[in-house]
Image 1: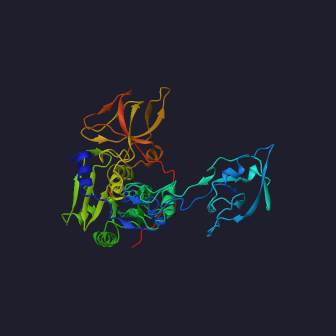
Image 2: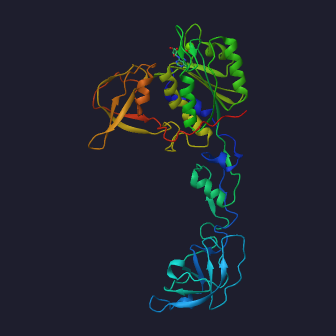
Image 3: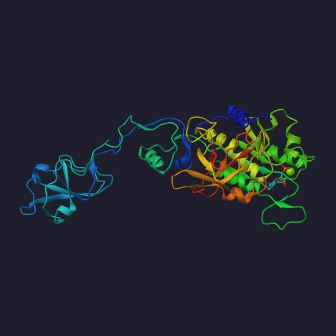
Length: 424
Ligand code: AMP
Ligand code: MG
C-alpha cells in the first residue's frame, strides 16, 4: 500500500495555480492576487479637509480663545465635489466640508464645534495648530508605492484599497470550477422517498459544500448509476467544462465499481490503495489538463479524503500555499494542533487512521480529544460533530489515554454564503 504522504505528494506534483486573469472587483473578492499592484495615483489625490468647519490661515486665528474669540469674514463655501476653489484671501476664512479640496493659502481647518457656525462672519473660540485636520495628497499612498503584494487574499479591505487606487480589474488567480459527481445505483436525490435498497446521495452535497468552503465555484450534478455508459457520458461532459472533477464511489474492488471500470481504461488515472483509514481506495489523475479526484463512496471516507488531498490542491490552484502555515503542502490545509487523547482508542495496523474527535481545553490550556462518536466510514453523525481528525500513526494499534498526537483541525463553516455557480 502507498503511504498517505506519498499520495499527497504525487497529487501536489500535478497541481498548478490557475492562470492569472483580470477580473472585476466583485469576482476578485476572495481570490489571490497574482501580481504586485503599485499605485499610479496618489491617495488622497488632493489636499482636503478632514472636518466640517472653516479653512483658515493658522496665523489669522492663532490668538483665538474662549475669552478672546477671533471674528473673521466668511468668503464662501466649498463642498466635497468636482470643484477648484479660489485661493483664500488673507484675513478671511471659507466654510469647508469634509472631503472638500483645500483652497490655496489655507493651512488649517477650524472645526465647526470651535466656532459659532456663522455664515457671513464666524466667531472662532479656539486656535487650531497649523495643518490640523488637513489630509495631504499622497499621505496614505504615493504614486509608485506597493499597494498589495502578489499572493494577498483579497478581502473587503483589500478590495476597497484596489478601488481607491483606481484598479478596476486586478490580476488574480480565478477560483477553480469544481464539478462534483456521485455514483451508485442505490442513490436517489435528497427529498425523494426511498424504495428498498435505496439511500440518499449525501456525498455530492457534502463534497460540493466542502469545495465551496474551500473557495471553488461548484457545479454539483445529480448522481449517476453504476452503468458504465451513463457514468462515462456524464464524466466526459463535466471534464470538458470544468477545472477539477471530483467523483465519489465506485473505485473499490466490487463487481460494479463503475468509476474504476471506466476510467482505468485510460492510463491517466491511477487507482491505488492508500495506507489509511478511512479512505483506503483512492484514484487521482490529470485528464486533458483537468485534475480528477475519484474519492471512495463511504461518506466519511469521501470527506476525510477531501480534507487530506483535495483541499490542499484547491488551495494551490487558488494561488495559496497548500497549507495555511505556508511552509509546506504536507501540512494539512487547516493546520494541525497537538492534542491529548482522553480515552484509549484502537487503530488499524499498518494504516494511518483519522478518528473524528471533539476538542476541549483543560484548565492548563491543553487541547483534549474525545471520540466524536461512531467511527465507521459510513457514520456521518460523528464527523458532523467533530472538531478535528486525530492522526494516529501507521504502526500504532492502540492509543492509551493520555497519549499526545497531532490532529488536523476541520474548517469551521463560519462564512457560508450563497453558492457561487460555475459557468461554462
Ligand atoms: P462504493 O465505494 O461505491 O462501494 O460505496 C461504498 C459505500 O458508500 C456504499 O455503502 C455506498 O452505498 C455508500 N455510498 C456511495 N456513494 C454514496 C453517496 N453519494 N452518498 C451516500 N453514500 C454513498
Ligand atoms: Mg458504489
